[in-house]
Length: 191
Image 1 (cartoon, one colour):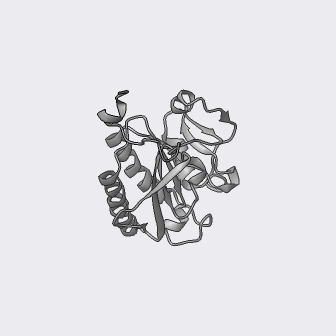
Image 2 (cartoon, one colour):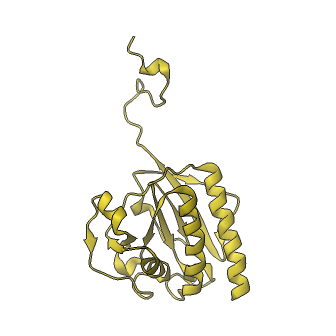
Image 3 (cartoon, helix red, strand yellow):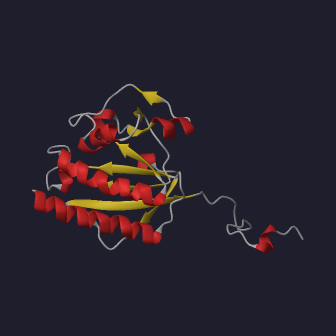
């Protein structure tokens, strides 16, 4: 399994690099991670979660966090209603209410459980509205993204055996035919 993990880590690194070639995350932005370590290993979601795969993915995500200044949030599995692991500091700054649960591999998933143990002063909240995210193994992160999610395509679309989907968000476009959506000197002028 070690050779597989090394290969998957390289694949995952390529995916995150590809994302950063297309999207600039601002420091402090929130990046949601949904992950089935079972799917990465070629098993059905929720059946074979592993700490080894979670550790490898977390290592790359932590490098991604250091590179971007984004804050990471990890979606739990459906047994915890897809609640989210996040640092207490990030939760408090966003006005998120902590819930009383500690993720476990069999109720929360291996990735969220691993993240809970690694994040400094981790808490669990019911939901977030993230600026961007990654879905590894079809875990359905959409409920934790801001209202207008935009898919981001990169060269590699899988890590191990798991399908990978990336997304960023943008503000809603409101108005109508007379609305302006881009900032220019001309449309900032009142003349």
